[in-house]
Amino acid sequence: MAITRKTTRASPPRKSERTQATIVEAATRVFAARGYDAAGMRDIAAAAKVNPALINIYFGSKAALFRQVVDRALSHAEMIEGDLDQLAERWASFTITGISRDRKRMQASKRALQLLMRSAGSDTARLTVRDIISEQIVDRVATRLHGAHAQERAALIATYLLGFAMMQRVIGIKALAEGDSDSCVRYLTQAIQRCIAGEP
Amino acid sequence: MAITRKTTRASPPRKSERTQATIVEAATRVFAARGYDAAGMRDIAAAAKVNPALINIYFGSKAALFRQVVDRALSHAEMIEGDLDQLAERWASFTITGISRDRKRMQASKRALQLLMRSAGSDTARLTVRDIISEQIVDRVATRLHGAHAQERAALIATYLLGFAMMQRVIGIKALAEGDSDSCVRYLTQAIQRCIAGEP
Image (cartoon, rainbow over all chains, first blue to last red; front, side, top):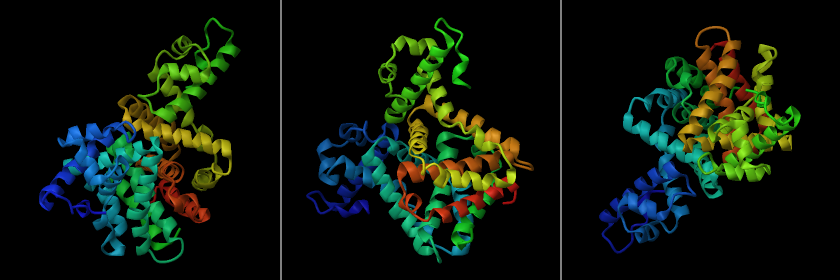
């Protein structure tokens, strides 16, 4: 879902797009910091410096805005393309070392993971996160896999990567955050490669 | 940390132990449902049907009570014992199918995972979860492993198992919750076995 779709409204498209992007950006911060239930539309409007009514005009509801936020935060479409033989290593090294070497990316990743983890506290949020992980990650990866149980294998790959990211970046397990990252990349690559190849 | 340690107080040990266990049980439910910050000592006392002052007498503070709760929820000491050759398969099948076939265990597991995921919203809770995963799971598994990078390998095993459990039971990814579980057990066993054997 692109943020730019709902732009057939009164204000000129370019300004409207910018405003929507600003709202999504602010909402990401507020949802990550407070969790879905505690984040109010007024807090988000204040963080985005827009009139609260604008959020309803652009997104319709808090639930719909949250969906856009999670969709953007968990979207790694470009990660799924490319040579199948190199995906395992690419995913593992991007998750383990690639993100952490870029401060801005690291911050965005932490927020996405916080959104994901804090969704456990709300049914609306949890179901949104479930749908978006399923559609954006599991289904897309599964279409790239040959052989039986492609959905299960794709879901396991998502589990390994998101599990690692949560434990390293949000929980802060020392061996993952400060340990030998080359070694972690090798083990994770191998685990993912088995799922790609369809060889348990 | 056993719940039964702080029992050198006025009331007879057995009743005191039972009361403490009741408080920890109630606190587990309240923390899992509300998250650390929103859970009040009064709510926990009400859920446990005890005087709020008793909680302070037994546990000292909300932070200390939370530590006991997480310690109990994430403690799987018996899982770490046994023949090293069979640990990978035992962990994978217990996590994937063993727990979900037992309603009570499944409920307890869901609560433990919710505690873990919701800890992302609070620094106190997150650091407690980090310490307990490190001490109760990573360190203990690491002492059983031979060869280099035992801490990293143990942390990866914890990542695979907790990652799977979160995605299956809390987020509810369909391929993991309703897909071919034998196939998932085989892939997960293989990923863990590599970490145990020290062969990436």
